Length: 116
Image (cartoon, rainbow, N blue to C red; front, side, top):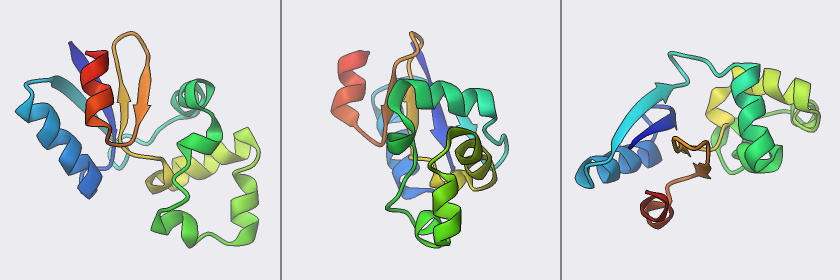
């Protein structure tokens, strides 16, 4: 089984995820938002599965630096997708996608093992 892992390479949570997967011998393909910006179709797929509220990392620095006007754009799906494409650091990480399409947001080792 090969998982798809979406995120940003230099993130500490991503590093924990990579280490965990490698220790457990779990194959994965990494999609780095900084090299391959998420498009509307991908963001829409994620939002349909987990909801926009879960997809946006509101605890992160990028979100906290937004103006109130920019935060309002995250309330409508189309403008939210545009903002997340431009500021992909605001997307919760990692997003772990299983071959059947199921998603896990964040580093959840037990949940990953359960699904495998």
